[in-house]
Picture (cartoon, each protein chain N blue to C red):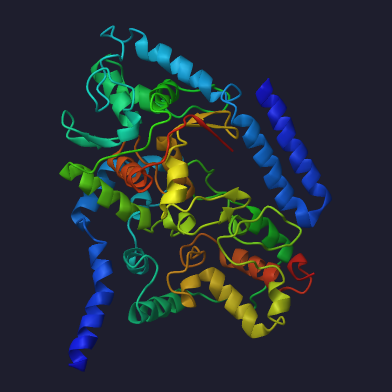
Length: 209
Length: 273
């Protein structure tokens, strides 16, 4: 009987996810193919990214999309594991770059769109979603405030590493996080990520003043 | 002229904001609110000029077929413009597709007037300083003929039901280098990108306010922009490839949002940042 109730409870949990899928993946595929007929035509001159691939969720995003960013425990664990495996660390073990460069990257929302110039490094556009340097008043609120981040974490070396991992692939700690996987997706270089870590964790950074 | 004056008012609001850091965001918001109040005056909204120009274009004989758009069937029968926008997007038997207002206008320009669809699409989103496109004029006119009416899109046809489900799926589908879906920015109340408020498009209240406002006169581009443009520009910012004008994906998303926001009272072109 207990098993039955447990099974019923499980079904109740699973049903909403199934109910959300009232349209077959084939129909979605067809709509996407018909609506983005020439994804390569979006290519800025001279660029060769695979634009069609941008319309295909990878395994992590498939689970996040299907569960509306609320993965089950098992799904979440698998996502965290894959995310951790994706992170590449600096060979010299130094996670902090230049916070001044980091501030510029955090302010910069350019890069990666079909109308962006090729060859210009992508910005991270952190201020779109986060408060960072308290002096910057034009900040978004989709993500948590990062003002005083380093001070709050007592400038610990372990927290410096966590900040690096969070920017590189936020799913390593928060499965189905809204935040882009800046390192794992190749949006930012390792040096850019180090500069952002410095912005958050350096005692000299205005974030911690 | 009035438009410039209002921009100055906004700038003043922004300038005041610099004085007191703690109150700055609030002051800026108040400045924008004052600006919006002034702009709520229908005679001060430059979008009304688009409605007039759209009406002229609608009634003018043009193209290889030397025809006007007055026999265009927007879903309520040939020639019926009043109330048509309130029920769009919808399924059209003659094309076998669910179409948006802009998609249907394009269809009529091609079939009734014999105009080149590709050329119309190429110019559909006007650039800065151009002062609007034919599509933006026509969409403003057609949209405004449903002003005061409630959005009431139907899901009667199986293709409309399917488009609704496709739109929902696309809303939540994350992909691309930034891993974004519509949900990334539009699934929680009271959020912002920088200082820009974001509507929560998972809830009817915010969705209603959003869908009844487009086409809207955008101060930032100094032109009317349509829902087609709004959705295409979101996809651009999401780092996706260029989505097709009047494509099935845009129609499905538009239908999904229009259904979620049904009951909202149409007032277009609205005034936006």
